[in-house]
Image 1 (cartoon, rainbow, N blue to C red):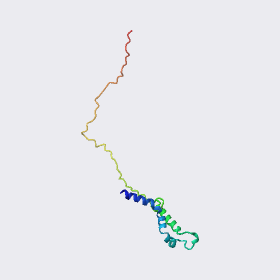
Image 2 (tube, rainbow, N blue to C red; image 1 turned 135 degrees about the vertical axis):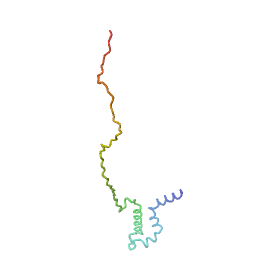
Image 3 (cartoon, rainbow, N blue to C red; image 1 turned 180 degrees about the horizontal axis):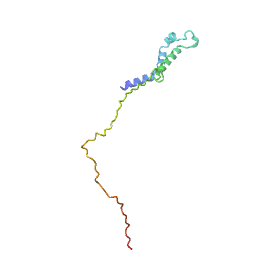
Image 4 (tube, rainbow, N blue to C red; image 1 turned 180 degrees about the vertical axis):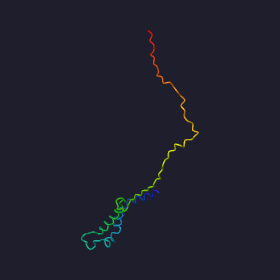
Length: 122
C-alpha cells in the first residue's frame, strides 16, 4: 500500500515534466516530422515549437476547475404553499353548568396598625 502511494505521488510530481521527457525520448522524430519550422533551418527550432505546445497543453490541464471557463448555471427554486384561513370563534355560552363558582368568603377589617413607641422609664 505504501509503495502504491509512493508511486502515485511520484507520478503526480512528474506529470508536468512528462512532455520534456517525451521530447528528449523522441527527439529525432519530433525534429524531422512534427517540427513546424522544418523549412527554416536557420531558426534552429529542432522541435521546440512542438515542445512548447505540449507544455502549454499540460499546464492547461493542470489548472483547477475554478479557473477554467464553466457553463455552470445556478438556479434558485422556491416552493410556496398557501395556508388555509383559520377563524377562531368565541365560545362564551359554552361554560359548563357543573363548574363551581368562586366565592370569596374571606373578610377582614381595614384597620391601620397602631404604632406605640416604647416607654422610657427614667
